[in-house]
Length: 391
Image 1 (cartoon, helix red, strand yellow):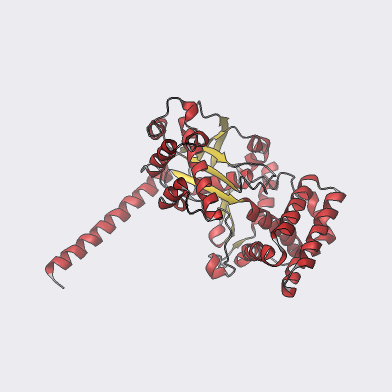
Image 2 (tube, helix red, strand yellow):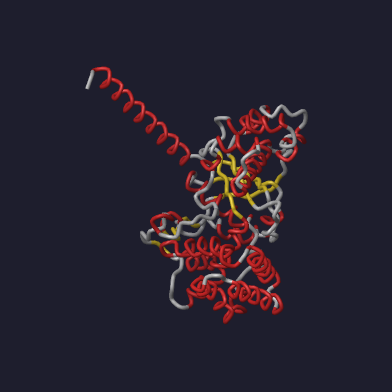
């Protein structure tokens, strides 16, 4: 090896070590700080998860200072704060370029920004698995969360139901499921299982019918199951908020404050969320593999405001909406949309939380990253935690 090659190699290693030290220093600094996180969402249609125009839900969290947020907003070159919203900017090419200037800035990075992304139709499938099938199997002594079996089953159903049964019948079942969870009446129960039967009977694969039968078997104890299901269980804003708290808590174990853009869903669940934030409780780690999380959540306070009072909320709005726009383009296979193409070059996935919901064809623990490495059943032990928090 020549002297130049050796020198270059040493310089490369030195640069990598320096970068590693800087990264670790930032991590250590974050762990000693109490941050303020600003949250805003995009695409919240409540229980209307089958809305074709808004197939994606996102919740963006930022921890910029007011000065940093104002610097980012100046990139938009808006004449008034009212113009500094994604829905206004994306209508014109100049506005789209302004969005891209903000999204390209060095302040838009995973240390300062986290985004929860939920594919709504896929979320329905995961809820059928988690609320119905997992409950049934748990009663029979089987832990569906082990090795990510719940994710594998959700992926398989989401991919195979339209292929073997047709999208129209899948949509009919999804809508019936939403109504059943929201209303929980006898008519809604009957409609849901009738839709599942239609789905099974239409399957072009005989083998797949046995998979759909898993859903039908949940009918036996459905009334008891529904008694333990909150009617807001299908609102994506709740799990997204929870996931944001887990993510920021990992970064700031000493705690953080939350200022959330006005949200009826979160305000209505504030009492329940406060139980998850009960810092008088002993810290416990729940779940398995990459999905492990700690309770209590490290949020020290939760307040609501609007974007006029905090420039950080305007930044969060643009990031949440831009990420949603990008994900919608991904889902539809966009090829000619300028804004989507330019956003895609920025790799918005680097900002996504590990708990974001997006369908895939992966069904093995190795591919899913869910090989069992010990842990506690999240459903059981979350319930125990909440019981203690109430006392």
